[in-house]
Length: 104
Image (cartoon, rainbow, N blue to C red; front, side, top):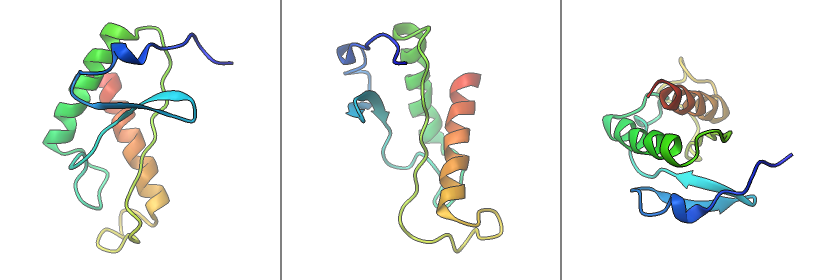
């Protein structure tokens, strides 16, 4: 069941990219959000997520959200002892973002 529709114009112009993915609003973060090959947020990533958290609280309180994590297409090599696959790394990144948004 889908929740009430979200007016994307309420999210635009807030300092991050807003689009639609699979018919749902999506906030995309680009660049150095995570340390290369790790699930640790960079300072820039934390700053970006603070903006996102503020907008979500102010504009979309009461809505549910989905967080997706991604990696590049290069196999995990340097940090193989921490992450066995890119799938595992992307899941940990999604968790890091969700936890940061909840705590902020």
